[in-house]
Image (tube, rainbow, N blue to C red; front, top):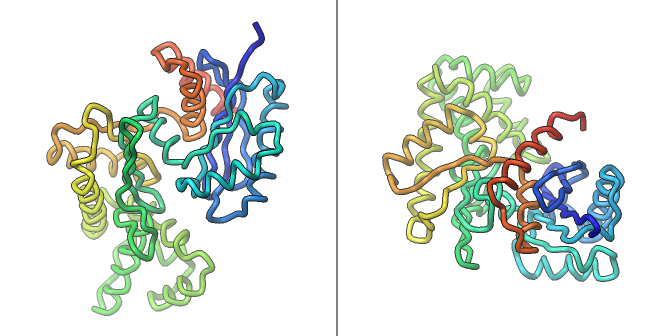
Length: 325
């Protein structure tokens, strides 16, 4: 019997990650390519990038395309059926067409913590959203972007930090160490320079989000930083309140995104969740998004993700993770 393999692809805003593995959960290769975010690139660019990534991944794994059963592509911006149809149309003449499955990247992110399709996902990264999938039905709360929403996100956190600096300046108050550090980060000499830096930036969301790590570092010692973090926690708790009636409490809530990678932010938030929603089980991702997409690829062929498969996935992924890119 010929060996069979499954590919998982996570197309994010900054890069696309792909992995390939067998039915027992052994991941044998990984590959990184350019962004696969449909809101930032064209369908034609996506076609070229995915084909290039898959080709390099197969060469690295020493696997022929004929041995691949399913390619599960979880792509940012591919949550609408109309976008998915465009992608399938673009790949109609491609040798991967019959193997390709396309979904939004939130599906793969959810699978990183649930080992399957069902459960609830909260993302607190540059943006914020709650996504749930239960009995082939999904729901979304938030995720309206930085102009209309994204409360509780890294962008929101960074914006609150910048506001605290400008308010301190208006009140002629001495800046806190973390506020000074933010000015130094931007190479500014005084708070008014924030205006020029932010409003002249081609991507203000990214640079505002980037200072969230400075506030998180100061969280333990500085009362102003604690106040900002408390606001962010409150907004994320409010998202859970809005989603409460739609959450499947038999499955975990997976906390995903850059803010939750900070241990203090994560642990304090989990404490607040347990106090307010005692019947809600919270967990972190076990693996990255591309591996979540690989799990979904296996499920497309009704391959059970049992304890042995889970152990193989975690072991082989962590071994690959330690390799030089």
